[in-house]
Every structure is written in structure tokens, then in C-alpha cells.
Length: 87
Image 1 (cartoon, rainbow, N blue to C red):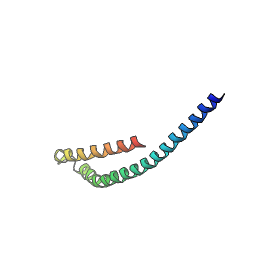
Image 2: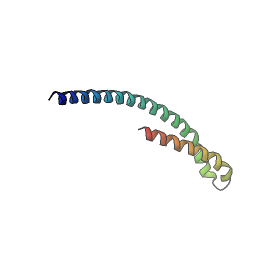
Image 3: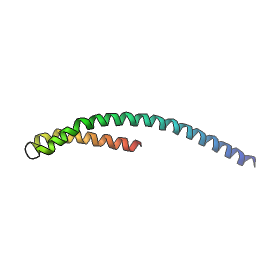
Image 4: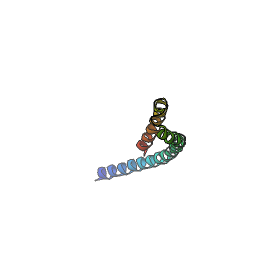
């Protein structure tokens, strides 16, 4: 009977420790996610007018604009994926 009580006590202590650690990690993740969001928003504000302009100019200079814009789009996409994986 005492073995079962010890096992339950150890399990409770283990889960409490895990819970506390996860709580701290979650708090830190929120801060990291907010920082990442702010960085991505800055990139979005920079790329949005370029995308809108490129949409208007499609066909005229699409090839020259396409490569640089493609890289910026890819970086923004990867940033959103990183943030999504953290949440």
C-alpha cells in the first residue's frame, strides 16, 4: 500500500514540475511569438505596397521585379510558418 502511495506522490511531483516548466516555456514562447509577429508585420508593411505595385505592372516588368519580390515573399512565408509552428 505504501508503494502505491509513494508512486502517486512521485507522479504528482513529476507532473507539478512538468506543469511549472511548461508554464514558463509558454510564457517565453508568447514573448518570442510577439517579437516574431512584430518582425513579420514590419516585413509585411514593406512588401505589401511592392506586391500591389507588381500586380499593377504585371506583364511590363514582371521578370525583373519577380525575382527580388519572390525572395521577399518566400522569407515572409517562412516567417509565418515558423510562427505557426511555435503556437
